[in-house]
Image 1 (cartoon, one colour):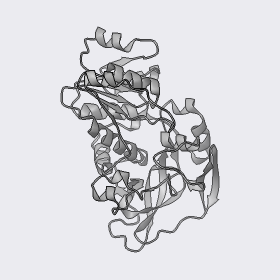
Image 2 (cartoon, one colour):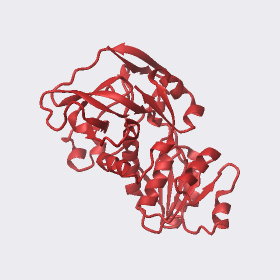
Image 3 (cartoon, helix red, strand yellow):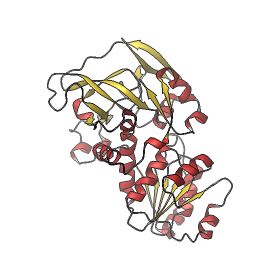
Image 4 (cartoon, helix red, strand yellow):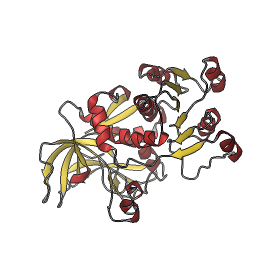
Length: 340
């Protein structure tokens, strides 16, 4: 038997003893070491839909890593003892979207930790193709961050950042801090971090922001003007709030890209003035999950060119998970890792 966090419905998550699964053909059994708490987990816990609906009885957790302890028949690429992280989105490879090279819209996608049992458990069975081997130099906590880095990589690719560009990022949670670092790697010459929490603004400065702005107590446009910031080429919204999305479009320069990366509640609507898009020729974009970017994420983390370790604020046991999901103040301090 093993301990697992089982989701039954809105604000109903139970730590239960369930059977340790057995790997089938083409599958491996992973002893989970670290699993990150994601905004999607919060949405699911609160009764909202994430990338897909989570059935009652599902073990949550999709940002995780661990050690393979058993392999099923037909597994050739992996062996017991391998240290791996997990891409939780398994594509069918047969539907129209998969065959068109945009498999992240797969009509039959399996989401490990969202539609089937995931990493908030002592053990998890995964298909061998969803496991990515990590080096001994990488900690399991860092490896668990590969999934959010992979999602951010897809988003940053869509931002079309060019060397010398000016990029503004709203929200200095983990995703915003990752986006900021990826923007720098992509060639941004100036990076503006917009965040109301002082501790997070300071962290943004430590990770390379050129300018930080408090959107509550400062006028964003006035601060930009006072610091001789002209055209903002790309604005990335990582908060998931309608007000910051509106601000993102307001400060975007002409012929710019505005990336709405933050996840809102499904029913929320964003008022847009088409004339403003027209007169500045803004390209408004969104980004959905992590297609084909997991290996790049692992390589970036292992290279040391992106820092994921400094944004981990707390490490907690599985029994504390529901408290984390229900406490926004605790989550606001940074990334929380569940150690198993």
